[in-house]
Length: 154
Length: 392
Image (tube, rainbow over the protein chains, first blue to last red):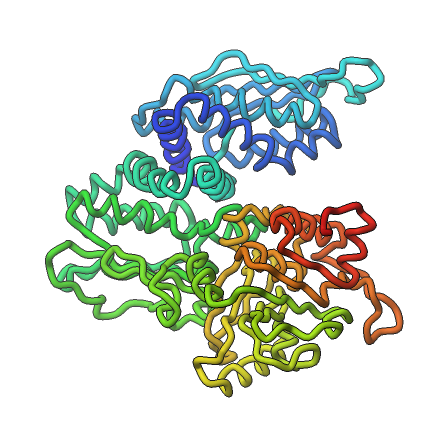
């Protein structure tokens, strides 16, 4: 059930926690969401490495209405080129006020998942389009078993 | 990103997180302010502009968006907007994906709708949900007479309505869950009230060690549904009966016969865990009252966290967790974790959806939480001693 109006609730929950309990509480919430709620996803990342991360995000964005995302599996990293963020797009379309910290949820949730699975996360850009990169935390050659660069989705 | 595809899952998880971190009021405030205030502001505007008709059109649009199997019936002459939900996609998502993080996910609807309507001069005149995906609402303009619509597809006539347990509202107020016990609407409070009169509890499982010790006359005895039905390992009158995750029809029938053959004052409290992967019987088709849920108390007391698609405790172990959650000195017999053959020649292995590891983890947690007031016997005692637990 991918109803885009749920982005309204996500946005409102972030603002409510921020305004009621403070910024630290919001970050704490995001971190626990990544490590606890998304445990089954980061376990797949941990077990399957970069190919699993690429497959997971490809599947995830396919179920987010309005998203335009390229997922690329490279030898030593996975790159998400998010041309249209479905959440920001829908919130803007409906003239919703988006707090300036909205995009940080990706940083804290995904970093938390990556810490569990053994991957670093980095985001550049935001507020509608961004690039997200996943790399193994262990950089020794023997720990990386990804195939050669291959776009998973275009 | 945090997506909308699994929104209901992280919504449920968020309720549980806020309750644990900031208390019960934090969730009530989230529903009222974040959801009823900001997220669903389009309902607020629609109600202000066009009253019940505005709400009707907004809900119908949401239903198409969320693929709800429901019917909204507007009868302005009778001052009523009614919803009959046949299969809630939101609760359905949780059940299908084996999620049960929060005490009461279904409460969130009344949690945001009541305060939103109050700001527009409307209220909920009646509402019930069965925690299995079926519910009904009636809404009306305040301070004007209201009646149910002249005709509507009443979900209460649907066989699925017989599943689960009912939370009920009347004129914005949540009604007592079990009025013959107390006026609390909260399942945890009902459980506390029921066991208030007992100083000690005796959990009797189905293993061979169940027969080793007679319950003290002062103890409240807690048993599972096969024991209540057959009286094989305990023939006395239990204070409570926990139905298992897959109760057999013949056991349900026998339980109902015994229950109704007992004077009302002597009947046990019927209980169920209502875990997502369990079979949810249609209680009234067995002439049984709907059991009270125990999961909210276990979650609130930190004695259990439901992990999707992972093993969950057997009925006997759930009874031990419940006893510890109630905070009474407890003796548990017959919790042998299928390690003893009992009436069988060979021990029975614990099978899906349970596991020995899950059982031992839960019992260790119970022992720690009980701070010495829980006494285990039989195989569970032996296995936890081997594991170096603190049960002594």
